[in-house]
Image (cartoon, rainbow, N blue to C red; front, side):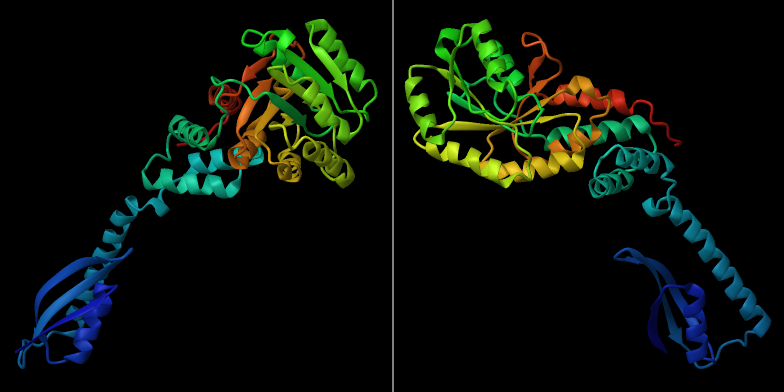
Length: 352
């Protein structure tokens, strides 16, 4: 009497194999369900015998049908606990909505798999809160409690509010640095009335002002203001595709290589995510230190912006929402972004 074990994915198929190999009959010892990786397998152990009671064909077929019926029931029970077979209508709806708003599809898919695996995919508030927590963990912020760098140079495309951001930051820091210890330097000679705007802010706040046109003069102007504790430098707005203007900015930076410049990129919240990405990539060769985002008050949707901020990994410095130089600047924070997102997403409806 010889002991054997057959292993396969179906009890019915295994039974047929055994009967086919041993038409004279066997004595069954045990039947087990085993998991191999992600798959369920069945192991049937038996002993071959030389003489057994003859089983009729009708009984054999009936027996196989019952076995296969049991297999179907087992499969249905297993599917109830299989994440891939669950009804994911709620999380799928949220994914589609957020994708339409500008969130990255691959990133959302990764989060969805985690939620499904942990059976957190049926409740809207749980899903949204989890996504917000993941965003929070991925954002990078500048340390606001430390002393600001001595020379802050604003760069960025035209119309994002660089000049106004300078006035706002000067006002914000006046409690730490007296305005008599500040200076404004204008390098923008392309935009009409650019120098008048910055000079007007300087006169209003009683801050010294310098206006230069040549890169060779930049270092000398910084030397002139060497007794200052905080110097803001305004550059001309540059299209990210205007290589000549970008190189001109590089020449200013190189001309002041003996000075420690902090390069800040200014972008506005109203830009499309694709444009934000393109501009960040083109300006990044300036070795950006921080990022300021303006015009939060001019858009109702910031999902695409936040997705960009999540992935760009440049330290977030300040946020601006409005034109008031006294009230409308705030240190960048995840609380502000997450609160805006929660309000933006609150009308998403999904079925559990």
